[in-house]
Length: 420
Image (tube, rainbow, N blue to C red):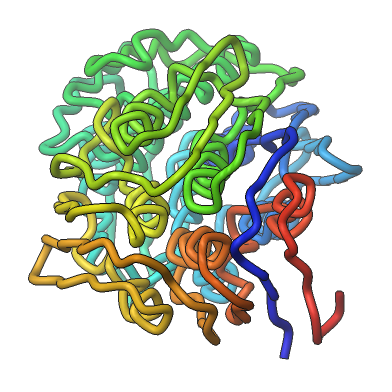
């Protein structure tokens, strides 16, 4: 069985580069279907979710070539409009192909997506947005059939600022006649990145990063070249790793403005954090301090994807920290694994209280989801002794080479067993 072995208790130092953002590149890969030509995507990380997206594109009829961190997609050929159940189940973000296929072909057939088990994540908002644009949506034995003889621009008010629904609405609206206005849109930086990509293809999309996004549809799009933004959650993971283990390190390749809530929390915990264009430097010395309540919220609030990671760093902080998870219902599955290391965490519903303990100890651990798996690695770096982490397929969904990145910072982290 493949394991990630981490020997804790060793301060980190050095510099590490953040790879391209998973949550940016996945909708961008889906958006290549709108181009009708060749797209070159740079800074594309080699993740299992990216590989799943590429398999979907190839199934649809695109030619895809990946070399290092660059992916070429040729969508300028006849395409099919169905995604089989096996491909859809590989990741939650597969639903983002729905809007792009519908805009390109006028008909799409998919099944419900898979991904990490983080509680109910209905796609009702996605489907309602498509209906408003003129699509007919039918459910047939677990398959979703969407048809639209003609998509027409309209106003799409979202009841909550859903990232996926905002992205699907933008992609579908690019194929609609007239202007579409998305209200209460999600404001995440990854949506801004999607807008930049679509603009590079000739689309007219504006307002990303605000709560109102406007799309002037019906324009023929072309191929283009684009560089994906750095991954702010990966950068947050490295910052938390240094906070847990102690030391000083430079994190490069992510926009410091996207890290503001994380760097503010670590600063309150006692770390010294300085930021500049595409870099952040963190210094952690001595025991961390507990924080005021951390409440996850849509951007620009504290990201749900960083909740488990920060919690892991605070397991040995002085005092207690309250976490309130407002996005997903089942995002504390990592707590039982942290308890194996000696952490004292009490969970009730959406609230978790972390009572700092003097130290954690190494243990055998199992990843239950992507960010929970990264949290176990963070905790292991600050623990005494060696930890063995399994279930690494979850980590590979969002981290290109976590052991290598940690080793670059001086950690004793290595893979053993399996095909290494």
